[in-house]
Image 1 (cartoon, rainbow, N blue to C red):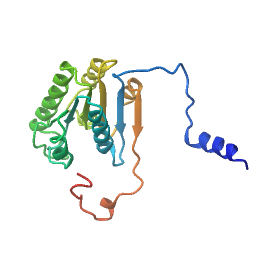
Image 2: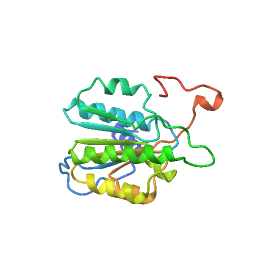
Image 3: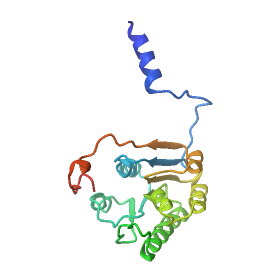
Image 4: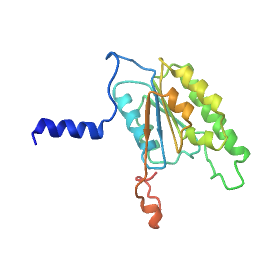
Length: 196
């Protein structure tokens, strides 16, 4: 088999979407969704934040449903053009459902994101905002409003365990993270600096 034939076959296997339309510079204001049960959603958002900061872009990284103790926070504080926002301690949502503190946490985190948009940041990351919707801490309409405020102006990244179809239709980038294997399920404890 000739090398060009191999490349063509590999391309059709791994790159199933065809490119369409004119190639053009889009500028800022595209919508990213990273979702799924696999690990790496926050890590991808952190990587994009560091890349944008390296290009002298202003980044506002807002964490929903987290307590602000993950290891990336230490690095964010050392990068002048990354602003990190977390409302504070966030207890786990138990089987009986969310408590007042979780609703307050989500409302404050959303307010941080909206203030960043009003300041015309370049990139706003709303880490775990999609999970906040799943637990009814935020309404879908609030997310649609957030998307529309950013479109064609500010790059928006949203992460979480699942993404409703209407959000996927509104997004420009959508990546699903699929878990194949994880040591947690064979008894490993989460490791600081690796899992958080």
